[in-house]
Length: 134
Image (cartoon, rainbow, N blue to C red; front, side):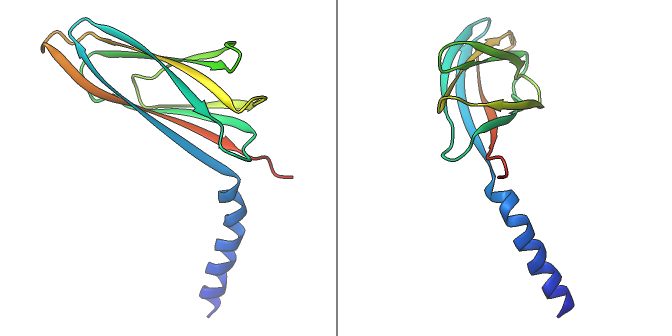
């Protein structure tokens, strides 16, 4: 019985923390010829009731010799930062306050794999938002 009470207390204590953050995953698929590059613009919609972007993460690209850069912009096209997205990485941000509900990201990839005519791969971008405790 005591263990059951501790379990439910932990669940209820954790619930406000879970409700105050949200991750957004954006997967971008590419098929590139050897030596080719491609650039795309991603629109990132801030989840409702979330005020700050606190983390950007990238799952690794499972392709040989692929370079990947992500540039993060405000809705008014002000460059915030540039990230290497070719490797598994997580960037913690200094509580980026969002004025508008949109951010833009430019993702640029280059296929430097000359062992095949074309290479297909996906880049998974993770954006973590929080609603500050009040």
